[in-house]
Image 1 (cartoon, rainbow, N blue to C red):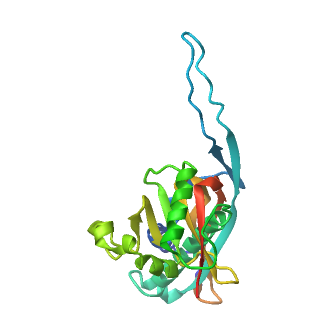
Image 2 (tube, rainbow, N blue to C red):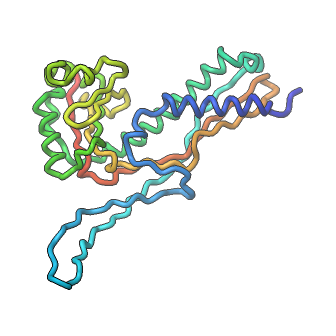
Image 3 (cartoon, rainbow, N blue to C red):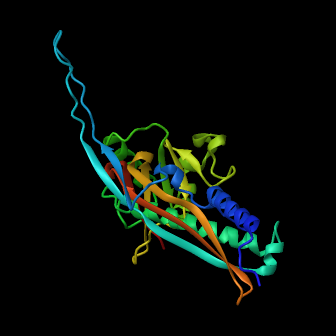
Length: 273
């Protein structure tokens, strides 16, 4: 009876899960501040305030900005996604059930990563529009104004995530979808469902929070406003169970996220129905 995990099988499986997670697991991790290799149960992100420039007298001392530094703590938690792989599935190295489990594990971990980031974004206290309608041009422009008034940098690091219903609403806005306004290279149906508009990369996401009144919380934010930390990258533990004649594959990771600067996030609450 087999008592040890086949090492080549284990290494190949873990490499496949890691690659799948990096390729298609999380849509949002690349849109926020990240910290990898965290040691301990939490990590601190620094929120830096605004500095003010001023003059000085000849031979006088350079004025100090006294920038405020506020520590924002993100607590890490451990997450697991496991499943069984039958003994004979090990033989199917290029296709079959093993690849199905690989992808399922990567997707599960990716959804959890995005869930952590979305939970942090939901802590936003700045809102555009109200909850009585969908995603309108007026609501988008109000959010745009609020980001500008808060001096959120317009440096190509802004992102906007909306639900699929709101993505349909956007496609009904001429300035968003029409090539005469957006340019042919920015049309949403060229490749992936994501496009640039008003200095931000807009993306649809199925995991955004929707409350009991069918109000979906969409977010427009700057990369530095949210932090995501990883203490343990995606890892797989594989053990043989003779009574099942199968391997049990446990995919795991340790992660956490936090809202660093609420001024850098504007939430657009949109009614669905």
